[in-house]
Amino acid sequence: MPYHEMGEGRVYALGELLRSDNPAHTAYLEAVMAPSGMNAARMMRLIEPSGFNAWLTITRRKQDFELKDDALLKSIAPYLRSVLRSFVALERERTNAVLAGDAIRRLSFGWITLDAAGRVLEADAQASAILAKSGALRRDAHGFLKGPSLRKGNEIVDAIKALASASKARPRAMVLSRDPWLDMLLVPASRNSISAKSVPAVVAYVHSDSSRSSDRCEQLVQLFDLLPSEARLALALSRGLSIAEAAKALNLTVGSARTYTKKVYAKMGARGHADLVLFVQRSVLQIA
Image (cartoon, rainbow, N blue to C red; front, side):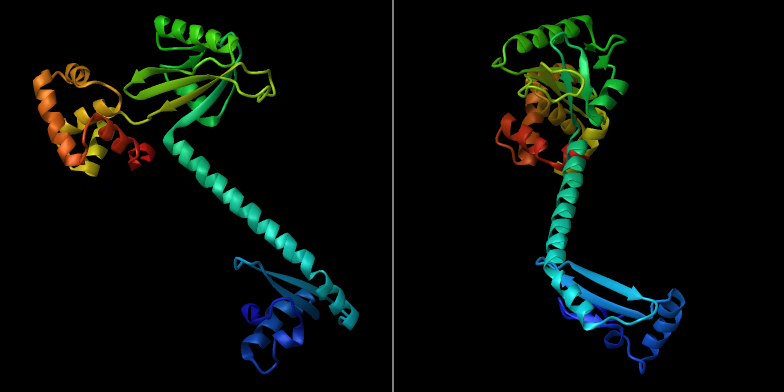
């Protein structure tokens, strides 16, 4: 069938599309049209402004179509074009949503809604996975959000109470685990209700790194041509540690850490600690 040779918006009869002197057309008639009982047909091609095509085909088993049928078919073309534009727009939005969702998933961000007592109301897929698998953040048997330790758990409860009691309170950020990385931002719920179960008081945005430090260090080596020891230091610095803190975590002297840091800055093209963090956070490491 010569679909792309059809003019846009024109109604075609079967005889205009399939010619008896064309062996391929004859084979199509015998193999497809005749067995299905499509003895008479009308077809119209529509083109969406961005280039998408749609074809409308109407068939009959017995009598052929009349001129009034052709006119009716042509009269609905504007409506079909409108439907095609809407369909293409929806497909674009669906594709964008899928890609955006995949990017967010790769960035390992999720959200949890909480009531004023710290009880979990709802969570998206990413946060639900964190609650189910992470030892640093979990939901206890009574539905309350718990941290990796009693001290951190009390810190979470205190932050939730403070945020729930004042809608203009400043957000609270905290690190729950360093390897693998897990941090959380608690903010007052900005809408009256975003939960079908109960009205949330606080939203917890969680960010996890499913990869362990050894994996991230290997990727830093690949990205910035660092030595493994330099990559370990760069990763520690990118996660907010000072040079002294990174030195202690990596069993280095502060002097050695400073020397390594200068080499890391040079290889990455960073002018300082802030640049290093920026380069790492903006790299594909975040979606690896």
